[in-house]
Length: 136
Image (cartoon, helix red, strand yellow):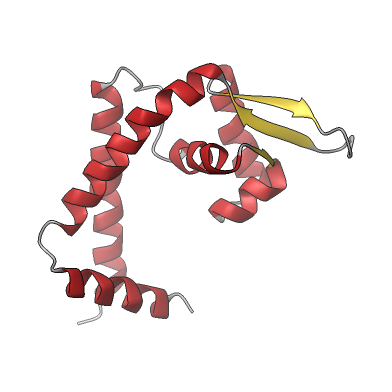
């Protein structure tokens, strides 16, 4: 009866497959599902340091650096030196990154519809609550 990890992993896999397919449909197959967290944070906050991004998306700084480097090469984000800390970089969306956000929001909405399709509102709240409890 102990199959929570399997089920959570399966939901994660289905979600990533959905995102990858939707990105491909929109001509953005160069993006990976893992880039979405960074794009979303920057869309919400404007500019963030690498450390702030790492904290917000619960990833290590080296992982965030690699993800941001890829996004920068693809012209979705740009890095600039922090005016207050020479050791730190500020990351922000480029015009291309900002222009992609409506598609990102459509993909996110579609993903949520897919994941919650067979759950009542009460079941969805309960599932989220139980998963949060398991993470404590």
